[in-house]
Image 1 (tube, rainbow, N blue to C red):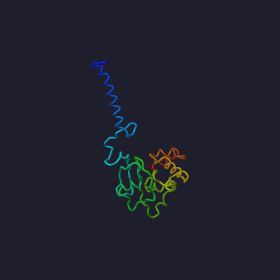
Image 2 (image 1 turned 90 degrees about the vertical axis):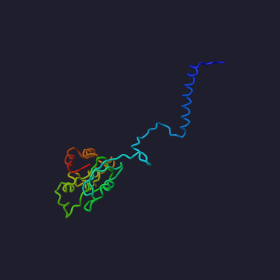
Image 3 (image 1 turned 120 degrees about the horizontal axis):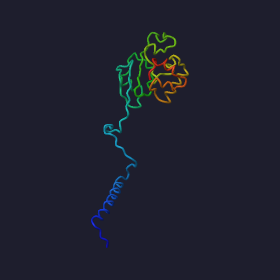
Image 4 (image 1 turned 120 degrees about the vertical axis):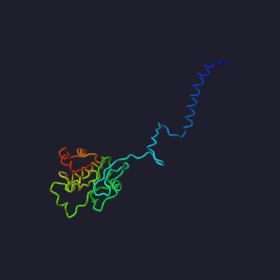
Length: 197
């Protein structure tokens, strides 16, 4: 019969206990998902919901009841920003705003006022009607017709701007226009004071 000393028993027992502990934890985890687990910070979890959605900040100006800076959920649209700003005023020209356009962090949403008495027709040749009224054209929400009114932008280039926006998402800066075929640095400088991302 083999007799072991206490030291020898300890050398055999410790690895054996460790092996049993690992096996027990694996058995207890049957049915749990495999792979690494991460624990989200408690501050980011709302009761009864998953992780909080990312947020973005937009600046709403023009013909709205409460212009200002608003925090919205990622994936929000221009219509959501107008709602947060109290909605449009009676003088707002909503036909000049693409309410379905997605918002980007840091974007400014401009809601122009309706022009009365045919003033839109009196804009000087070569200037956009929006620029004549002091309101910048929003690259994030402008229609082909609105972009066509900008100096040096015809209907074909206006359509390219809208197509680029559809394919790549909202413009983050005026410099993004450089990625649109047919627009170069000289044209961007010409448009810089007339448009906003």
